[in-house]
Figure 1 (tube, rainbow over the protein chains, first blue to last red):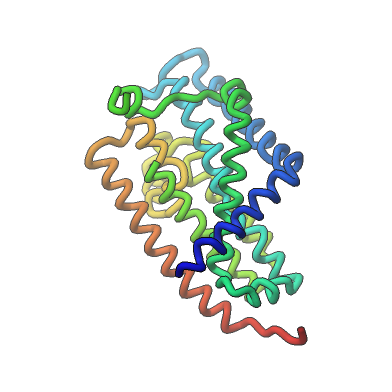
Figure 2 (cartoon, rainbow over the protein chains, first blue to last red):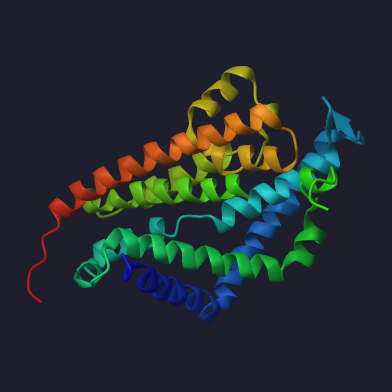
Amino acid sequence: MTGLAPAMAQIARMDIQNIFAYRLNFGLHLLGRLLQIYLLKVVWTSVYAGRSEIDGVMLSGLIAYVTLANLQTWFIYPEALDVLPNRVRTGAIALDLARPLGLLAQIVARSIGRTIGAFAMVAAALPLVALLGSLEPPASLEAGCCT
Amino acid sequence: MISTILAYVITLAIGILLSLVSFWTLEISGTGLLYLFVNHFFSGALIPLFFFPNWLRSLAELLPFQTQAFLPLSIYFGTLQGDDALRALGIEVLWCVVLWAAAVVVFRQAMRRVQIQGG
């Protein structure tokens, strides 16, 4: 168990480095998601047709919701879905299985690395996110519980 | 924050479960595409679940996808508070346990199928 965490941290670090090595590709993925957020904003604004509220749901709140929902589903995307089948198909899975760290732990570590890298990219793109979508602080902060 | 971490753990379990299918079929791009669409829709990322018709919302609440966006963000925006927020966290914990148990079982089955020749 003591060797598990450092090994997983090392694999996660490799995946973070991988994201930054291919930052243009990853940035384009993020740009695609931001475009989707912008288009959803346009569609929902059109659906509201000049009204600021429908069924008690404010348009501004809805756009903030859609923005955060799409960012969240993007950065928690399970990398295993792309990586593992490819490694099984090419036979590279044999190398993964030969490693001292279990395959399941490797998958988890890689996913954590990917998420940290994606989160860093989203953090860097926050001004663009705010421009294309909308951001709102959590309700607990607005209520003053954490100030 | 806790809800988002649970959402991540659930998403990871679903990802592992689906990717393990490749040990039987080799190619899962179709499954992956289906997952992306179903997940995106039922997570509430495109349309919040409170705009769904009742029958569709009932269906969405039976699936684990609402835990990936709708529940964490409902807590974030204060739509779910108190007992409702705790219930939402309970649903997420339940899905974590169920999906990870399933992932471990399927993983063991997949490992039985692996045959490596040469080296």
